[in-house]
Amino acid sequence: DIQMTQSPSSLSASVGDRVTITCRASQGISRWLAWYQQKPEKAPKSLIYAASSLQNGVPSRFSGSGSGTDFTLTISSLQPEDFATYYCQQYNTYPLTFGGGTKVQIK
Amino acid sequence: EVQLLESGGGLVQPGGSLRLSCAASGFTFSSCAMTWVRQAPGKGLQWVSVISGSGGRTYYADSVKGRFTISRDNSKNTLYLQMNSLRADDTAVYYCAKHSQEYGDSMVDYWGQGTLVTVSS
Image (cartoon, rainbow over all chains, first blue to last red; front, side):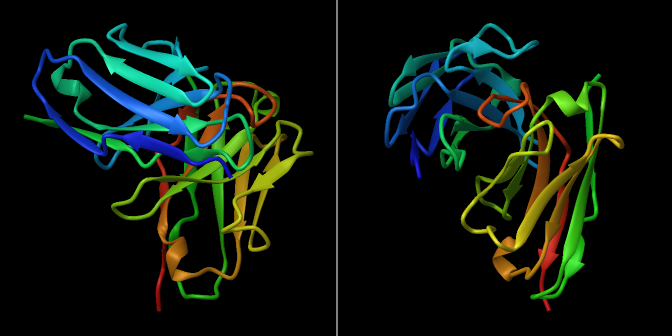
């Protein structure tokens, strides 16, 4: 199975900060990586697919990059509604696997 | 508007069975793979199973293989998850999710609201 490792597991940031979350795959997955946002007691929401393509309706302050084994999710200017947990997921190989999550908290 | 509505969750004893359903609308159901993902209380997301748009291909996580069966009825736009031999560690919110294409090696673009399964005596 492909292991997905996210870092950090949590971070504290202020509104307006630039935030970067890293996701590393245990083996190459090309660009078959997605990012999801989940708020407490809510279903996940799809943000990014194919490593860097924004899902319809996702604000442009979100961006993704990377290929192979190393990927990043960047929020260019953190907004109050962005405080949530973020997950990466590879869909290159079954079983599909998620990272452990990164909780973005208010500083 | 894409809508995914799960049902069938509840309290079940260890060793028992439960069938989850996910009613889909707002898209061509038979053209999209569908996935089940679960989340244990306070934990992260765990992929459970996927089925292709036609229903001809299915894949499972090792933790549920042989106990869970994914299926779909394209005439009813409904996805199912039959869960047998349930264990305490199957306790989770179960989400159904839609893939963007016919096969599961494609992005998930929409999620249901989830249904809680509790396995306890």
